[in-house]
Amino acid sequence: MQTNGASRIPATSSVPDRRCRLSRVVRPGGSTCVVLALAGALSGCGGAHASDPSTATVAVTQANALAFAQAVNLRAGDQPAMEAVGPERIAPSPEASNPAFAGCDGEINSDRILINVRSTLLSTRGERERLLIVSRVTVLPNEALARRNLAAFSSPRGLRCARRSGTSISPLSIALSGGARAMGERVIAPSEGSAHVLGYHDIVGFVYGPAEIVLTAAGFSHPVATQAEHHLLRLLYRRAAEARGDL
Image (cartoon, rainbow, N blue to C red; front, side, top):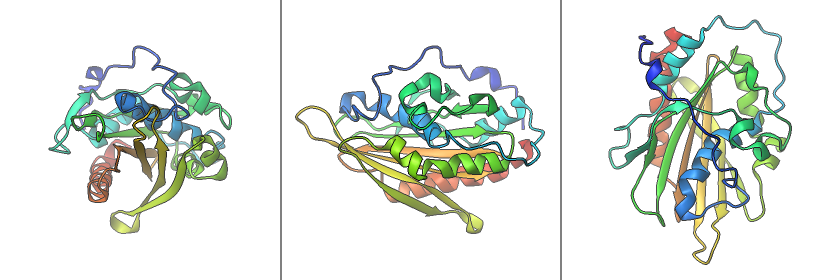
């Protein structure tokens, strides 16, 4: 895997608007902000108390971790009916992107993360029935830590982190190849204002080696189609298997 494209991924240059949090939930006009917050801060919040296991760390360099993330993450063209509205980039830590989420059950130790890369943001046109999809690849020192971090998102403490007034949360489980499964949650939350648009946020992920790979799919008025989500998760899993040499 070539790593000479690493420098083309920009780091986030500023802290996202801290008003973009689930308690305000979905203004259709602010939907991009909500999805990016969920893609980073909410999933990180679930793993806030994942303790460091005693298993040996994997000898993965940051360059290899970045190459793996680039190879796996969603990109323009993965959903032909959607357009790329934001570039792939190094994601901010949960503490930086939204301290309210990161601190809801304790802060995640971001020093343990080798790399955290958010994909190109894919979007349909329009606002009231807009669909948004983004993936995230987070590489940790070892598989055990990645599994604990992902599992913590669906734990009682992780669910309390996500739950706000007016929201409902239900579990998701999607079969992948080889008996693997992607696990996550659907968060349904009402919009602000008089439109009463519901936002459906599916946050589903799996672990491949020391990497935690998460898909966030958001729909306004209706969820992203189940078939599309399953296709994208299986695409991410296949790419992870193809790029496993980097880890």
